[in-house]
Length: 71
Picture 1 (cartoon, rainbow, N blue to C red):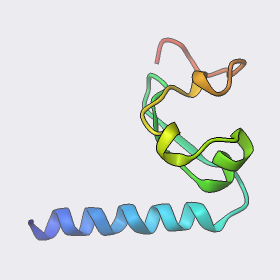
Picture 2 (cartoon, helix red, strand yellow; picture 1 turned 45 degrees about the horizontal axis):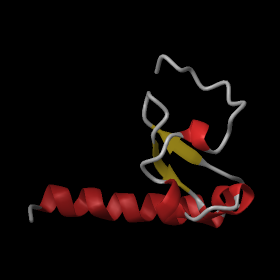
Picture 3 (spheres, helix red, strand yellow; picture 1 turned 90 degrees about the vertical axis):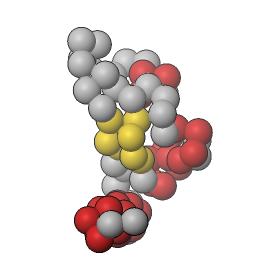
Picture 4 (spheres, rainbow, N blue to C red; picture 1 turned 45 degrees about the vertical axis):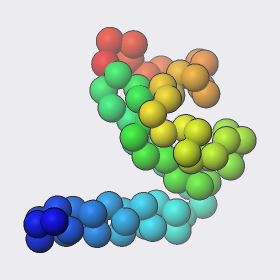
């Protein structure tokens, strides 16, 4: 594995740890609403686990979201 990829993996781990340090809920989605990352606080709020949420669309969990359907 190249050094650049190692650093990217490390930044990803650090980013996830920082998100989980807060009691605030955070979710990161792609432009179409696919969940790319979600912290434990938001999972607790939604009553789901992280593994279940990642890869699904945010609309699966928040029906009345203002998230653009056009991406």
